[in-house]
Image 1 (cartoon, rainbow, N blue to C red):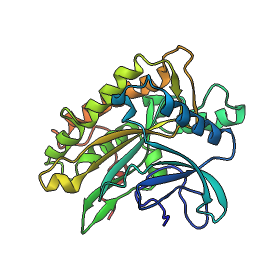
Image 2 (image 1 turned 120 degrees about the horizontal axis):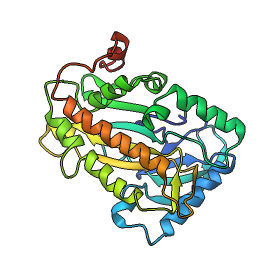
Image 3 (image 1 turned 90 degrees about the vertical axis):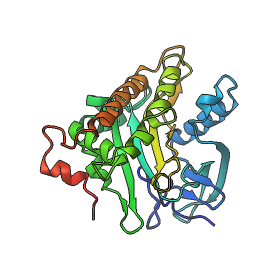
Length: 293
């Protein structure tokens, strides 16, 4: 009944008896609760958010549906409590997915000195401090014959600014002469940029939550696009173990990262009109975004 998520691109993976998320055939995603206060904090957020009648439906659609908690046999074979969520990839056949952690700061105000030092090290080693976001993982569907391009997570995390630009381009096009898919995924009234701008309007006003260390998940379906239908681009917010109360203050850390991401994606869409790689990109950078086969 339960299996390892076939399209997970970041986070803890269930493999070789280690603890990680599971999915079933009914479209549900089972995320093990973290053993410290992060697990209870994430459950508390989902419960409070689900009951908050002031969240507009247009914003609620960006969040996974919450189905409560369940104690069950985990991926390591031990009984463990899980958060039960909507499996965001369950309705897609060959989803292209990107996980982007938002914010130049990925630790909360109550974090321990040890945890802050750990997060600061990672934020400095990645583009989080420079750009206000970092790519945590991705997979790009190429074709039935080739399968997926899925670069190693450590390689993605170490991407430079120029490499991030390349990855945004690679996410929507394995053929630099084909801009149609990029325009449908990033642009248009229902594209990823339009959805991000809708989120930006909300974050410019909401002061209920501070979404520390949360990620945005980008998804689309290349197969449907090749058949003449919409690639169905979609943006979702995930990972809420570090959400804190906003206390009437705008979440500038998330909002700043979101604005930077919107700017980068807008530039990526324009750059796809130019076949040349951005200046300063090395051969190693190009290797990062080849088809991996």
